[in-house]
Image (cartoon, rainbow, N blue to C red):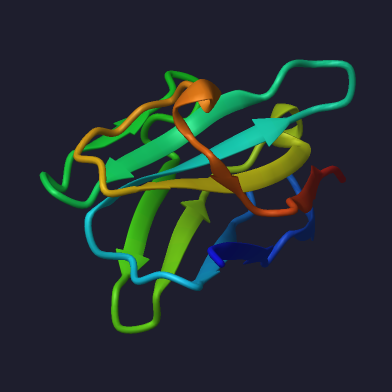
Length: 125
């Protein structure tokens, strides 16, 4: 059974960096779409960054362009979200999501059937 486990969240000061990890098990990160989402208290879950394994294309939300980088390591079956220049408004629970056997990359949560449990990121001084 496909499972995703996020890690790497925590408390960081504004301007700092964190790297989130998403370890996949139960399937091989081969042909897939993968994305990171976040949800702040009282707000809807929003797409942050996504990647298509087939094309290598990545898409970032405007709010994180130039600051966040999505990547994968197929040898480790793990995806990452490098977050730089963090702001208080980046505070949220971050989730990774995967849809196997697809070629697209989407920031719509409705395109993904497999989700991790989330990891808390808090940006505060």
